[in-house]
Image 1 (cartoon, one colour):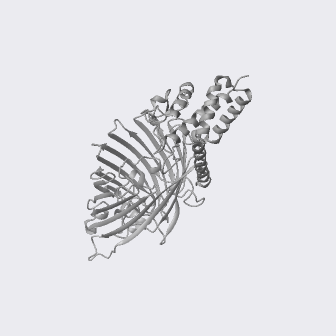
Image 2 (image 1 turned 45 degrees about the vertical axis):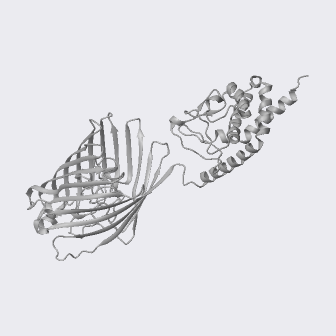
Image 3 (image 1 turned 180 degrees about the vertical axis):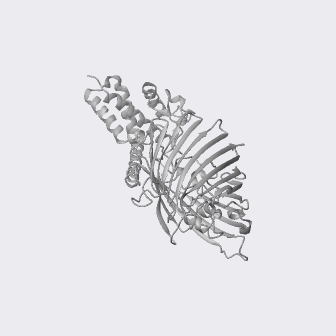
Length: 546
């Protein structure tokens, strides 16, 4: 009768399967396409999860002698060598090392033993037990006895990690939703250029945004943005939109709270993305083509953010009490790797079913833009927008006072239609320096009893330098012309002086999540009148991103 009987063979197989099952999680749990869980034994941490680059994923080796940190004189080396060369059951790294963080060879080989147990268990479970020799099973049994304490310790630590992982999975916010936030502290002061001495005081305001980004398929996006702010529309300095801050809004109380964005974006095929929003803005669909567009990390003025393509009648109605956007439907179509086309329709008072409301009543706008990128360094944009505005605002400083002239003429205007053409350019001069510019031409006409027409021009040019002295810093200088009336007809009145906007800022990156941006901007000839003087606005903006 064979010294290794069938009974002993069954016991050995059972032992192999049992030992493998006890710590199978150590080798197989939490693996994915781009990362693996590497469990190692060390003085400080027995089991730790290491995020690996795809190039660093473990590679199988065919001989233990290829693992440079294992001594061939050890008994464990000889025992495992035959198993590894037969079954290829130990994984090593591209540099030919078998790594255990500050681990002893006994713990390292306990992990290697576990790998071989798993491999042989797979063979037996597949009905190929005859492929495993009795001698190898005997070797495994002896190794299990030799490393029993290490295997038990490894099992306990892995069980603890699994319990913590299960707890984290149970307590995570959502399997499909990510929370991102931004908080802005603004210290603002200025002079209107008219009052002497200035009647304005230093203001300290804030704005907080929480974005809940939800994906149901991995390719779509449902964004819900919550916003709280006490930063009012900063027009009280000069009585016009020309001095507004990049992050100000329509705060109606000390702590105004609102849903600032609510839109859903989903793909149709490989090249088309569709947008639907009860609360949105044109810049959600149409690329602003401005590297300084961010109100928390880029420009400090509203004028420096967007061209008239997205600003005129793009959000809120004439009596809007919030900074929330309009209802919007649009799409972005990638025609090729160099050309894309974007278009959208907005209705500022879509929620109302009566009066100047609904998706076709009140302030409405349709806009489209071609974006052309002939090279990595150059991006061009050509856009057109048609807007209808009820009441006295086009959302960009263009109002009936400038298009209608006298009070009697103003009373006869029921709304304004406008057509705007915009050209944009971004040029990455070097990896650090970027030049961007846009130019706009708008012609507007009144509706109602009063006949009035006006043409406007506006432009902006800016140069910015990133990582100028330290990584994450940003310096920017911009100069431009706010809306200037260049031609009038009917009851409209022309401009007397050309307004200009000059802005400078420097963003200091304090840490990955905190930046401080001091800056100043000047508005010359506000509302196209030299009598209005030069408005000066100084800002220290602190932005927290999380």
